[in-house]
Image (cartoon, rainbow, N blue to C red; front, side):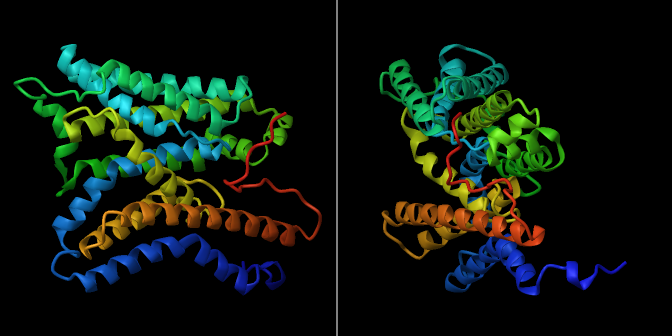
Length: 354
């Protein structure tokens, strides 16, 4: 049955929705074509695609982890520090503690989840803003990392690391780096969680309007702690992969992943489901960043081009996220033709503290 013309959204609104939702994937394709034309011998090759997928898999996983607390209206700034400690802990357990590598990986992943839950408890029950709380806990983690390593790198023994452990990152799957399959699998799990299960929907409601969530009976504090625990779990897994990739422990390596992770998460909230932190949008955003960085690298850009690109993209991502949220609010108000207060999805806005 055809929808009555009067109930259809205006054509310009439908067109704006398509541009807002799928403009970022189109940009990824456009950038790939541009750099392929500029560097036809090196950019559109399987080796280059494999290199991009391999190099950007850990930032992509971190960005996906960051989307979980963002959906609940919080930010976890400790993920970079936690990544550094996680990869150090895996190597220390395997090299110095003689732990079997599967047990060491499991302990670090579960430890990441426990630390994430602690972040959630501090934020929700300590009534501390998530920016400040996670920046403080992250600094403590960084200090702890320096203490257990003495500021020195963790090196493997004479026999090296177990081959099965390094294969977690170095092997291939269907001709592509296996780390790319981890990104896709994690994105699928988060998409299912956010779009099809009550837990994800509760997090969106809490992030939009925590007071309204409490009024309808959602235990906001508990689910916010769950969000931080999920983020910590993902960061622990990323730390395992980083250890398998680097094969040495660098106490300060995690900090360089913090900005790209948040750029991907925030920019991803402007795609697929504009105004919401979503897994598919984050994957697309990381793809845009990966293609852009690889392209400017092959064009011979100077070393400062990478932080410039990341910083400018972060500002653009925050601006677009706020614009998408405001546009969605206006559209909801126009459809109801009355005074409404739909949930705010502006990821740049802080949650109200009772």
